[in-house]
Amino acid sequence: MTQNKSASDLPNSSIGVLFLTALLAVSSSGCKQFVQTVSYFRYRHEYDKAALEYCREVYNAFLHKDSSAIEKQIAKPVAEKHDIKAEAEKAFAFLDGEIDKDRTFEEINDLKSWSQFHNIDSIDYTNNYTAGWSIEDVVTDKGTVYDIDMRICFAYKQNEDNVGIMDIAVVQRDDDYEKEDSKVRIGEFIECLSPCKLPSEYTEMPDREAFSLSVREAYADNMLCALGKGDSEWLYGQFRNSMKNDELKAKVSDVFQFIGGSATGYSSVYNKFATKRVNYGTIEQMTDEMIIYDVIGTNGNVYQIKYEMTYFDDDSPEKIGINYFAVDRVGGYDSSFDHIIMDSIKIGENDDT
View 1 (cartoon, rainbow, N blue to C red):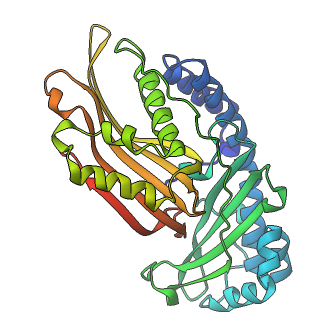
View 2: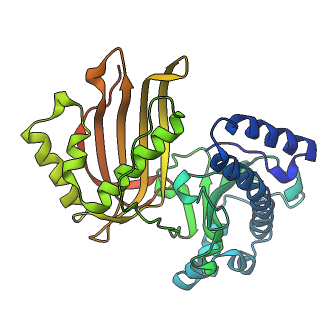
View 3: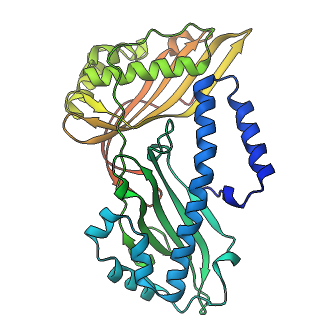
């Protein structure tokens, strides 16, 4: 989890500094990135304020053991599937002792927010924005320490009923988080997918003088186009020459069979890691580690696709191409928003050189 002090707790001058810093950071990346950054700070501020209210309501509900108050905060689709009052009562009973009633929510300084990229629409934050928040160091009169973690849907245009708390997990701090007897859960996390359309035509790759972001976006678009077309020939052609053989062709064919032949949509593309060397405005070496989230196969399953790619390398041209490619079939999320991987197909190896 990554700690983020709420924007609503920051003075206006601090928000201004954050905004100016972000503006300078994206000034070389073009208008599209600038608009995304403006949108992020605008809506993140609003969602942080809403999150504080959710956290306050949940904390007070635990303080006074008010199951009805919990029920009011739960998103409608979750409430329809669960007996929220009964689950809340179980969560209250899970606590070893009583929470100090003299300690108000305003006295709690340990709030953290956490999220994963694929639960947020990075183009339109009003379309889909889901994040996790934690109330940490909740202490009972017996000295037992707990975290109260919750996953909250703040915006989802495709179904506004999804807005609200999806689930709440009460976790005893001194225990192993993975042990079932160390935590109790109210509700469940329902994935809020906002599938994007796949490109229908391949994009011409920019020249080396282009911004690295343009190179990355064009290549990702072509990858998405190939997935939509079920184009195994294109994908095979992207691997390093040293890897190309009949065995690789068979593995690439297996990839498309694995997703049902082709893909019909995806949620987002994330640049996990990148390296670049530039000489007088020309890119001499550039690599990326990319993740495409929530790829929907024609068989109805959901996947995430990872690839490591070298676009340019003047010193080692034999490294140009994909050196690692993985398709993971996923089935829901763990408590940290990471996809639970059901099974996978992997080609090549991670490049540590």
